[in-house]
Length: 377
Image (cartoon, helix red, strand yellow):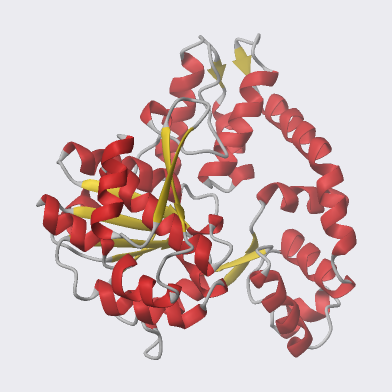
């Protein structure tokens, strides 16, 4: 049997767990032309949710385009990515792709290539005949989905994945231009998804932000413990392997019920215990030890490159928890120094993705790094 526990990639089909209510709600919102800010910590399955949502929307006849802004390294590459993602969502035949570009973006030169898998891929040469690239973006590119939707009499859904990365390109200038176009669109729904909560909240709820009150804010929560337990038991049962209750409890506890972490640990457990008919807590502990051992070179590199103050703080949070970390008792017990210095370290660790904040508490983004620190201590 193939390993059913998938991590580090988009998950669809039987391996995609739950999220039925979220998808049903999003479908209703999108059909009402709602704009959505989807805010989710890393490893919660945000991208997989969007992919499965798009499958549901396509069944209803909607056209969908997903734009991964991690791939955009400049304003020019963002424009290329935006246009090619939208056009590829509409057509797949090379000759029709070219006609769409000639009709809607005549200033651009298309390139059509074939991927190793045989899939047609569209590229755009953004050295337009018009000299002013920004003018092209403002006047034509941002309005491309609405223009195509009106022409085709179709509703289009555009999802920006890791939307906060737009601020690394041309900051609020892109936001202003994008909002100016989007607020006039009636045949296109937008999803602005991201994992950097502070930036996304600022974009959606700060009165000085161009996207202030531009859409509904949705925070993606963890998958329920019960749903994960049922999924784990069901998949191991397919190969006639029994998991003891305390082993399942240990899996959920160690991974803090974060989708990526659960899938990763179960994937390793599946491979390690493939010949076994019963899996115990000891098997789970041994699998965790294997993971931490394999990750040690990576974690040592991270650790060696962190300033001493940030090391002390990460270790304190890993061991003592991330509640009330600016209290006198926490600072004194962990010998962290004055609160302002700790606040500086927290801000840096948040910005670099080592820490996450939820309900006023702090936690390490990588739970396996946390387990590694616990053992190191």
